[in-house]
Image (cartoon, rainbow, N blue to C red):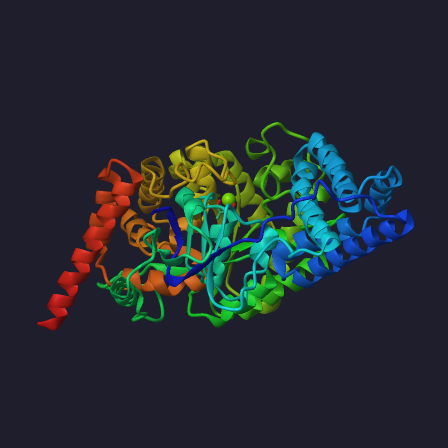
Length: 555
Ligand code: PEP
Ligand code: MG
């Protein structure tokens, strides 16, 4: 059975499914004392709010969960449930009806508000479980290691994974750029997503999951388990340390992606060459007012100082579409992914970008750090020039753009004339090139980073950058795949940026191949008729190259 291997590593354990939401009992009768029932609803919602606050990890998911806790504390929910209870409706059903009505209202409003309906449904499921006294929906706690299987995972589910007995993740839906993939990689958990056959596996089935190959094997024999462990060890044993290099010492800089202060602290402790993508949205999430200049200087200084001599590449605010920010009050759009997002928001809210650039330069001066600043969602050479002029006017020394829109990739030669470097965001570049929503649970096939069209665009950007002698990196999820990383290097990427735990495997993969071999892999991937064939050819060729290198060393 195969899906998308989105986070490398091998796990062998029984699968256990997410606990589904409680089903309302049609036989449930109304409580005898409405006042008491309303109090039970109030207590259930308070309990859910406390739970959400407790599991709110740091960073983006934490902010989402805190917002959920606030919603659960909203007295209007109790009032709406009380109205149903007053009409003789059973308690759990009353709360469910009340919350469903709010969800319908949010969905009718559209945009950011519609996305909050999913959070409210999570609150409903949790509160109903409390009222009915049944297990909380979400991650089970069987008391032994297991592979967590689910249709798909929500941010609230994924935020609770760290420190549990979860050895690996398996989802029926989802694709290579979804949040499950991103989180699995940042936790270093092997994961296979977009595997519909997983639905047929009963709870408790022993499974061998290979997060690199994207395969799962039910009921593996002891012999097969041993073989897989040996193969994985051989493939993954960290041999190299320090800067990224191919076997013939061609440098491919290995950088970390960070999105919170906690990420920064962890990545700063790890073996990497700095930060290739510092997503700054976390400072702006769930706020009514933008963060002040001083607040931003503090936060950026903390990150820059942690990396000392290593370069930190900061991306200016990437708001809109899948990263909604309430205080920006962006207009409702039918296609937010094609609307005002990324750098485009700066035309409407210029002060926000100005303050951010001022804060970044102040932080850089305060810490004496090496900093590069790049803009997200740049579509034209004109936008690149305007951003570069603005950033330089505030004192930014190294200015770049992200290449995540096909127009920017096709016209990279012109864009790059205005800036010092480019970084390819393969997550958005896949979404826009294949016209497939990156958050779609069912379009993973199109979002596969081995798609021919995506590889052609990456190759074109690298060629344009080489002609101008500008560095070009890849900072989308594609860079974290140890099989694809040498292909990207072969196409001409001079740096690869990924979740910090993914760096070691990518470093090893590069260290085992010469630049010429990486180029041969890139040519073969570009020639392959399908993404699956590209992957299979790259795997076969890499294994053959490794074999030759081992033989040569053995002689
Ligand atoms: C990308 O689009 O590839 C990228 C790195 O940016 P983000 O995932 O934050 O949109
Ligand atoms: Mg992007």
